[in-house]
Image (cartoon, rainbow, N blue to C red; front, side, top):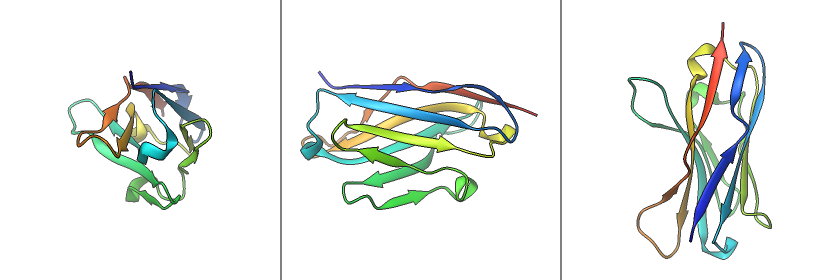
Amino acid sequence: QVQLVESGGGLVQAGGSLRLSCAASGLSSFNINTMAWYRQAPGKQRELVAVIGSGDSTNYADSVKGRFTISRDNAKNTVYLPMNNLRPDDTAVYYCNTRVTFRVFPYWGQGTQVTVSS
C-alpha cells in the first residue's frame, strides 16, 4: 500500500523558517517520476508550490522562488521543502504529491498545516 506521510509543519512568525518532509512508502524509487508540494489556503484552490523530477529538475511557483528549495533523497523516497523568509500569505495546508510510472493519478499525502503569523 502506497502512503505519503508529511511532517514539519507548524506555526512560525513572518521571516521565519520551516522544513517540510514527505516520506513515500510502498514504492520503489524506480517507479517515481516526480515528487511535489502543493498548498491550499482557506477559500482558495490548491496550487503547485514546487516539483522535482527524477533527474532532479525543479520548478517553482513564482511566489516562492528564492525562498523555498525542493530536494529529494531517492534512497529514502523522501522529498524535502525547506522554506525560508516565510510570509503570512504562505499560510496553508501543504500536501505532498507523487506521480508514478504505473498509475495515471498521483498519490497524495494527508497534508500538514503551515501557519505564518505577522
